[in-house]
Length: 477
Image (cartoon, rainbow, N blue to C red; front, side, top):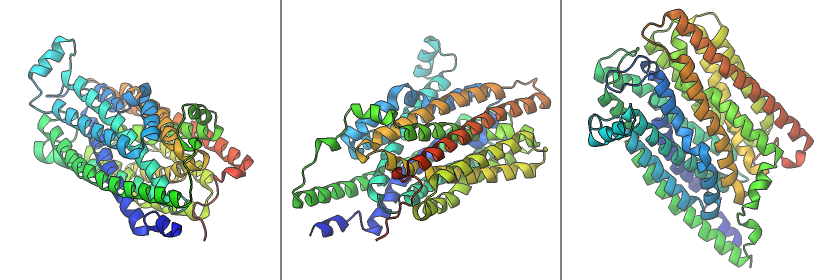
């Protein structure tokens, strides 16, 4: 009877993969909205006709995604996630994703220009009200998205423990990055088709900026629906687990409840620190770079802006294919720390190519293919390693702490890169090229640190085999 109850949902492949799909769709919408301007960042160069933003302003907007996360939001909300559970807490932060999206939508809409709200903000001293409000909306969206992502990751660990955990996490990442791919493909087409403007330095009409957010909001609505479907599945699973525990006369121990003292245990876990540091340095090499990729590629390889935009789309498409494959490899073969080292090295080589290879477009395509491979290898091995070193009742806090460290980088690096790439109407091609190379030097430095940290994690894994970091996930029956 006990075994029957245990096998109703968690051991049902259909239920597990249905849950994974329900969890992945909200993340698809999140990635779409976050990356909807990645392939048109070069348009944030000269002061824009309607928005009045420049590239440094765009860096502030992009970095705002991590603003609330950095200043304690992620840590506090991660603890709430462990205390209140993924269903209640996750719902709150999926709601924040929607709220933040709506704020950005309003800030970039023609209705905001000249409105009472805009005039009031100007009277308060905001010289660019649309930037201030969009930045606030992006910050709210970012906090909601990151905690929702923690809830999703913790839920996958719960549903796939002892099963295809790395594959499941890889598939979730792949589907989420499909949102990035959709955004990077659609943005140039929507803006160019509707405004009839070339994708070069110039103005983004407000109506065209809003069209992208409208598409993102549509995806978000679908994501909210699937989130509530997941809640129904998860509630049923918890009911079955409670029934199983009752049949076994098992009582829930206080040791399984979250305690504030657990934070100290997490922060003194050397392997956790290594994973957190690898996360921030590695992801800044990819995510922060992606937001400014066209601004670097165009002067570096002399590309047409439309070609540069399509080159950037290679970055999310490659992991869509390879992350699940590498995740399955980790599930059945292990060697996770070795894959992290390899992925970090590939990313370093890719940035070296962007910075120093001859200015031939083919090298741009090669570098982005390599970035895509690295972007597949490291996350497929890294995220599934956390449940091996942190207990399940502390996973929400642990993942939140990792995301917090990551978001410090994702907040600061876009601001730094935006400042480096900032140009004016009088900037010549040589200055733009120099700025692009200088920006790449930042990413090269970050990649070097990521390699060092991944080696330290590998060494620790060799010294502590009981952690099973390099062992397969799939339990043989």
